[in-house]
Image (cartoon, rainbow, N blue to C red; front, side, top):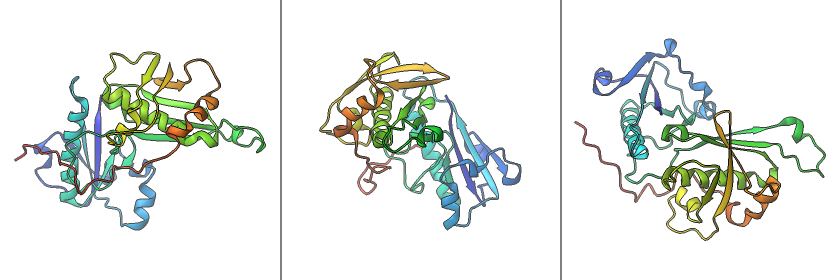
Length: 263
């Protein structure tokens, strides 16, 4: 599956296209529109956006060791963005890569901006009286496809359970990417350490959970394994999965960087 990064900058090295597999466009001729990135407007509001060139790195990793391969590609993209003082965008997740001038970390952490999540609110449900549960929120991941996995979705979430639902997707994604299950079957047993491992934590004081996956429209939709109401299932996991952690993991002063043999 494709790993794709976009660098938006006012200058590009003249030999960039020869060094690795890049495509460089004049911004006015580029098929990529940075305004499609959800955080671009906020970024552009505080900085004059570079706009002369778009450099796109697209690659299809081999079947084995996809996380490591994707890290290597992002490490190259980080270096070019730092060299050109440009903006680095992960085109698969649709997010701006934070701290792009820092080196890539040696250890793969899914919570280090490898997984984006799109949020949607069904307005017709959200207008229900306050005394009724709205079941109006939908989350869908972005980024698992580059690891050869289907994206995950969860729909019909009440406002009070929105953080729990998001963390269910994170823990399940961590299990699928790094836990190496033999297949993405309908029933997944997510171990207790999966949510902590998403953020790089060595311990997590919580419980695992079971989830039922139903494929539809290229997405694996997540639900309770025994047919109970979705929000009752989420509420029961609220103690373990209610809190949100920062992203990317806040250990940039101590982590070991990924070292590339690049000349």
